[in-house]
Length: 184
Image (cartoon, rainbow, N blue to C red; front, top):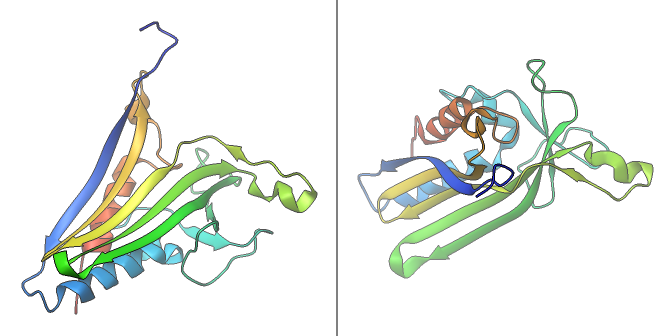
């Protein structure tokens, strides 16, 4: 491998909770899934260190609802590291259920973009600068797991680079937050 080449590898941040009853596991999965889909409240979760994220329409106007495929999310700037043109785009959103194996999964694919509102100005281009990052919540029996999966480069300092514009410690706090304080 030459010094120009980099190798990508996947890292994950995740956590699991175990319910005490198969009766409550689907309800707890639903609670965790709803927390993942309610992007506007991510920063309010217990333990979350995330900056505010806002679901916005194609003109940048805030929307008060859970995310859908192809939605835009604005990362509210909290420091000079994040500028006002940092956005995420929901590339995919999928739910699958298998009652026989007592499992279900919600998967959201997200990419970071800059200045997504060029289409309002008549330009049909997006400035994508990160690969798709996956958020996933799944239930298998009594276990509910939440995780973030991301490809990273083996370049020097790749582990220090923000993921989707936010540092790993903040994503860890978010994963902990969606699994915290679960009540049926």
